[in-house]
Length: 163
Image (cartoon, rainbow, N blue to C red):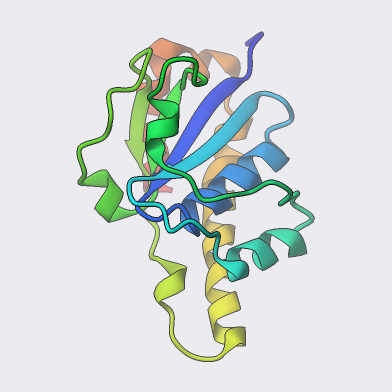
């Protein structure tokens, strides 16, 4: 692979799971991946527990923001190779037509922002979600280039939903 693989993570509000995945893949991807995130109905803010969980792992959170998925369907937007929904609501929505017809997959995660209780309990939910996301991303990152080629990427991404 000469160019990094562009990956877009989607959830409804783009405030937690998709942001965790975007930042972590950019951190772990060693230049082979460029990650982005967006939402169908973005909240406009990133959940502070998501930012804290990422910062605890040494992940750069500078410039992270909640944004609409329309930004990535516009002319001039980066062309995605892979689009992954990380919440069931976004997986069931009608997505924009993505330029280049990227591979798609659904990697469902429970919404950590729905956890009630103390700040410690809520932060633990975000840490746990980040750990689950990390597991799949580490498998993706370890894939040889031929598994990430456009023709194989669809199946590779969907296979990872079982991990």
